[in-house]
Amino acid sequence: MNRKVAVPNRHAALMAAHADAPQSVVRRSPIQGRSQDKVQRILAATAMLADTAPLESITMMQIADAAEASFSSIYRFFPSKEAILEAVAMENLDRLQKEYEVYFAQADLQDGGKIIDDAIDIYVAFAAREPGFRSLWINGSPTPAISRRSRRVNDAALALAKSYAVERLGFPTSQDLEIRLAMAANATTHVLRFAF
Image 1 (tube, rainbow, N blue to C red):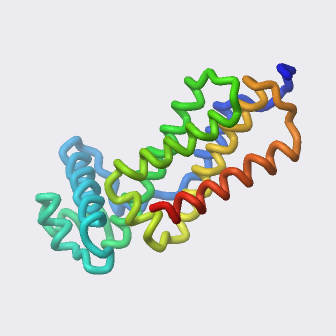
Image 2 (spheres, one colour):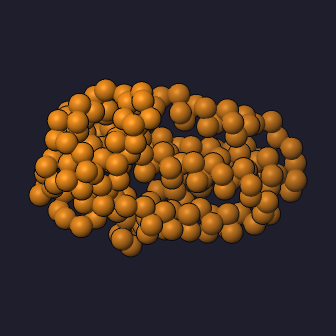
């Protein structure tokens, strides 16, 4: 079943997924390296706090202390605690999508089941190691912007899986393939949310 069928390549699928990316929740984009480092410290500190305390109990002062940043410098970049939490979740989702992109670019398997297993393993490993991911996405109440970004990550992963199935495994492009991939993605997402 190694027929070649014309489909958009993986890079086109990825560009489409990124074209509609949401605006950053950063109030002011850091330009200098020092400011970029500060924003990264703020995000890292917030992610760690999200894993150790209920989200509603985290304060801007706690974030400032954990990030070793002044209270005013945090407000220079973020309008609220919710904006910081959203930025952490968005950054996590961006990294997860990149992991899927790298996997599908390098995968050389002929077994569709193994590919799905690997994709699930990527998600599980990511959820286990990324600070803030479980508390902000899996266990939290995602904002509409986070939900939209998550759907874009899922859509990109589906586009990559479809491209791989058609280009490398020889599956014909069909509505049946799209339905099967969508069902696998939805079922996996729901099962994994319950697993954590």
